[in-house]
Every structure is written in structure tokens, then in C-alpha cells.
Amino acid sequence: MEVETERRRGKMEEERKNEEMKKIKMGNYYDNYYHKVEMVFRVLGFVLSFVAAIVVGLNNQTKVVPLTVSLNTPPLDYTFIAKWHYLSAFVYLLATNIIACSYSFVSLFLLLKKKSKDNILGLLIIVLDTVMVALLFSGSGAAGAVGVIAYQGNSHVQWNKVCDIYGRFCKQVAASTVLSLAGAVVFMSLVVLASVGLQKRPN
Image (cartoon, rainbow, N blue to C red; front, side, top):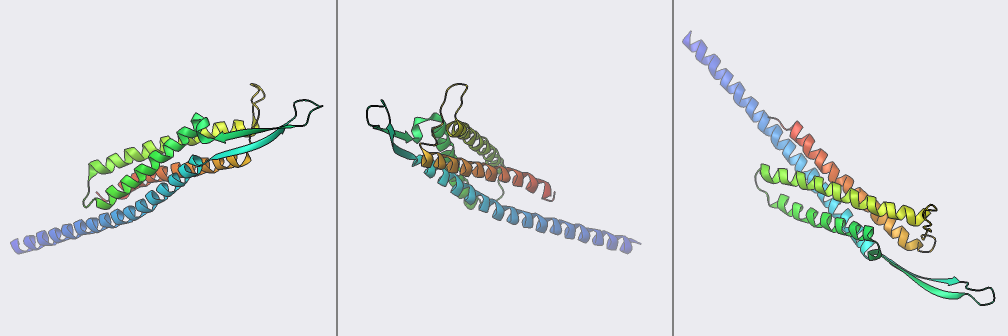
């Protein structure tokens, strides 16, 4: 009777160890998979925010427009200059993308150097990813609002559209805004990925 009880106890202990090993293997699988996908998304976020910052930071256009002052005189050429730092919305767009780009680089460095599970660092990165989402969406929204007025104008407050004059300038602003939005989506995907990873990871 004692031998049978000991045999059952040994079998239960072996099954428990096998179950624990299975959980460890599954946990390592999810950790490795999440780490690879996270690295890809962070590199993508770095590239998108970096290119968006470059596009808006180098944006300027000089346009010579002939204006008729009087019917009896020939048109006079006026030089109009548009630069990114003339509008605070574009300055903010540049600043948010520089912050996101710098953070992407630092977070990549930290993740590559991290040897073991660090819950505090992981939580901090999730919080900062969420902050990057808010920054990039707000910067894109601010630039997009100004861009719509520049493209369409506003007859209610007598604001004329200017994109018919500064065509290339407006296109670069639009491209930078789209890139910034894409970067925000990437960081939002990182937050979602972290949440899903926590749910999928075995206890």
C-alpha cells in the first residue's frame, strides 16, 4: 500500500515538473517572439519619426509672384518666403518627432542591453510609448489643422489659402504629417503588443 502511494506521489511530482517545464518553454517562446516584433516596430518608429523631422525641418520655399498695383503700370515682382519655423504648429511637429526619434533610439539601446526580465524597465517603456503616441498624434493634429486652412482657406475670418502659391511647401508639410501619424500608429501598436503579450504569457 505504501509502495503504491509512493509511486502515485512520484508520478504526480513528475507531471507537475513537466507542466512547469511546458510553461517555461511557452513563456520563453512568447518572450522571444514579442522581443523580435518589438525590435522591428521600434526601428520602424525611429525611421518614420526621423524622416518626418527631416522633411519638416528642411521645408522652405521662395516664390516670386507678379502683382498688379495699377492698370497703367506693369506687374511688380514680389518675393514671398515660407519657412517651417514661421508657424508654431510646424515647430511643434518637428519637436515631437525629434523627441520620438530620440526615444526610439534610447529604447532600442536599453532593450538590446537588457539581459534579464526587468519589470520596472518594461513598465517604464510602456508608459513612455503611450506618451509618444500622445505627442505624435497631437503634433500631427496641430500641423494638419494649419495645413487644412492653408489649403482651403477660411472665408469666415478672411484667411486666404496659400497652398496655390507654396505648393511644394504644403506637400512637404503633408508628407511630414502623414509620416508622423504613421509613427504614432507604430507606437500605439507597441502598447497594444505589450498588453497582448502580458495576456498571452503563461502564469
